[in-house]
Length: 355
Ligand code: YSA
Image (cartoon, rainbow, N blue to C red; front, side, top):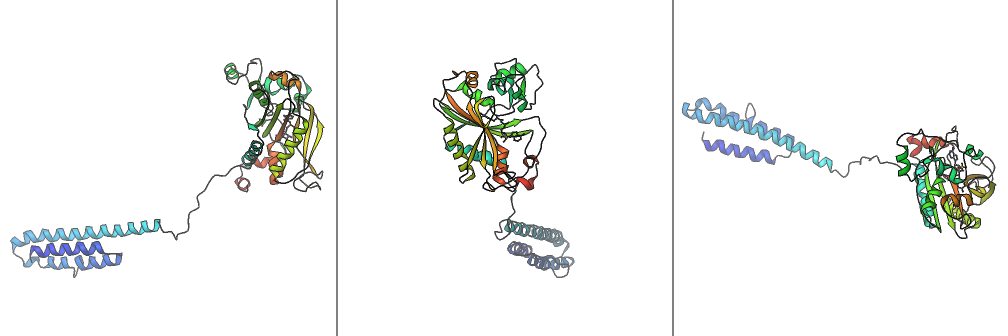
């Protein structure tokens, strides 16, 4: 047995192991080279006793090294084949895809965005204001002085005052430091904040969260959303309001809807109105949503009171304008036929995912 034979065998083993394509081929190669009975390396080992002591000293370790090398090459190739199979599977375009769980917009977000877009298309600007308000902006400047019975219309979450109070008041441009703080009960205070900083003509909408300390039921929450509207100029009239709001509902509900204005009372408007839309579900015939009346009350509105203009720093008779405040949940309930306002805040994904 020559050293070259061993080297030749090593080369042969390496070549065939590298080109093996399956586990079965590799097993056959294992048997061929290092199989216990007839493996080519094994057979050479069996010839060792016939060699001279001198040759055994060099050939023995060389054969052992060859056996080890073949074993290592086989193990490495088995692993390579397994990795290749995994990789092929990873890009197997015929495998069914895995569904990625994505987030979902809340129905109130969807409706709020739609309302913003409708008003923006009618040249209104969208502005926002703080949820923590002062008594001045939420009530006094809106012609609702302390002890006025109209304050009972808005059950209020009052906030405990603290040393930081003065700093907060300053930061939020609340010069009326004697005021108590509260969670705003409506978006109307933003009317004053905006008018303090801007001169007419302008038209704005103000979406935002409001809070009321009252019992919840199918149509009342303690935390809900409103969208305020305000249009002021030299000659803005109630006729402008009727057109704008009619156009708004037509665009939002994507069909012609009749609206009805009824006299109502809010201290910050004169005259004051409640606005009804023809029930979008039954078309005015009467159903469970409109409680058989054919109409749905959706907002309060009116012509801005001169006292409000004065509180904002305008002359009382310098300008005129209309304002309105709608309940976002009520609009969403009509649009999507939702029977109970509390579903919006239930956190139940079965509800949310329907929109
Ligand atoms: C009126 C005249 C204006 O010139 C400007 C604005 C307003 C609206 C006034 N600030 C206001 O808050 N009126 S309101 O108490 O009648 O509420 C307006 C709308 O909010 C209601 O028509 C209703 O849709 C909704 N709303 C009231 N309380 C609610 C509520 N939605 C859910 N839960 C409650 N607890």
